[in-house]
Length: 321
Image (cartoon, rainbow, N blue to C red; front, side):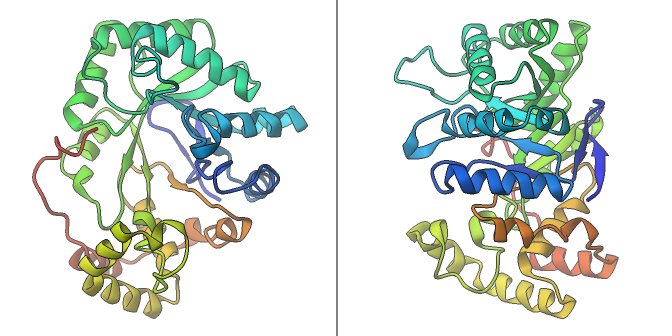
């Protein structure tokens, strides 16, 4: 495993980040514990969750699973860089969502309780909230940092202009600015390269790609099995990108690597990417990704990948949620 400093923070994170969205709704508590132990043994020290994760089992389920895992061995918390998120609706109450000061403070306390920890290393704004003044959001984050409940603040799914605005607001308040942005980024979805990645590099923020396999599109030839790959939407996407995926799979075969490993390795070759999220539902899925940090792609291979999956589109304001 390899490690990088996350943006301009002092957090040293593994360049594979364990995403936990499957814990609970797709992966049992027992198997989730096994994946967490396997990840820790492999050197993965970066764990990402969100207060809303839980699917049909209910919001907060995933954080509760993490809390039970931490409770089994108190030493685990010090070995993990723990990231969570705030924004999504947590109930039918219209006040129980977004980035208002009230919701951020209450949501953070509840996340800490679920996970049985006294602080979150990286607290991320899950989406941009256009209904709340940025000054109010930063005020809440400052309170959490001053109280020792949060160490650093990051964003997720933010456009480049909002990343710049948030950082300038922090600078004007003499506040430690954003350290990371978690974005949808993979070989098929590359619009973040237009404005988001340049903004992050300019402010020395680490980029954490999510959905690195494009919902399974980049995982390999078998498109008929496995969760999201069976959906009508997935089948339409496979058909749309069939020629690209065939060329890509041929390239990977020539390299002697799986398509999923190459897709993850490609992200780690991109300037500014600190870690890419892997969200295994099983231990075998995690094991198949552990060689990714050791894969080196030549300039020729990177150029060929760019030919297969060129970046397209206009500035990604519409991309921001």
